[in-house]
Length: 349
Image (tube, rainbow, N blue to C red; front, top):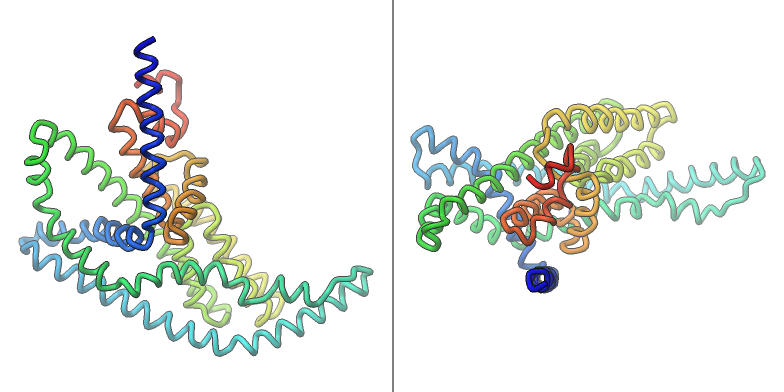
């Protein structure tokens, strides 16, 4: 009975501690979000950094090369998207007029079939500006990093430089358990790194394919739709669907019905082939989360940190799972986040 009471007390304390921690994290999201960006950029950048160091370069020179390449890529991307976004905003009045024409024709067609519907209602449902709100909030959420660009950049640099000395620091703090703790941390970092790199490759392939395909079809602002496909592919379950909506709407306003069907077919092909065939082959079992856990993590981290939390929902949940596995009191959390074991015997293992 005493053991049960102690276990119940420990469980209550753990839940209370987690609740307090999450409350503090949500109220401090303006500070935590740039740090999360820095941490995951540093984890991904660690792969080329380690490769450069194996080639005989010093840590400082390797960091300078990696950061320089990162800055150049981000600058080119910002330039491309900046020009495309400016053209999109400039052309919006023209597409608004075209939308009114399409809406009027649709209302007349429906009324001829005995279906009465308000043109204003159709306009509100198909407003390009409204459809772009979610994608825009996603970009703005990430774009808020622009005000923290130098903070994120310097944080990444210091993380990469300091990573080499981290094992020695850990050994000085906790000498006896340093090796096992370090092994756990290495496991976490490698798993997150493999997931993020694999997801980035798949998302990049998705974005480039969408860009090229829509450009060949003749849809305006193809680079913008390709970037949205790349960005929202990081959002599990619903990201690829959301990325398709504004492009399809733009196709309805700009292209002939046959070409609209082609645009829809492009997105269906990408979501079917890349999302259901190629991505599982590349990702394998790197996630280690159940389908329900992935969806709930999207909702939860999106509530915690907004659009940025949605982008990082899977890596964050992977970190939570690994952290929960390190303590007997919290292993049940790791089990709930994991896919169902093949047999009941796995639960005891």
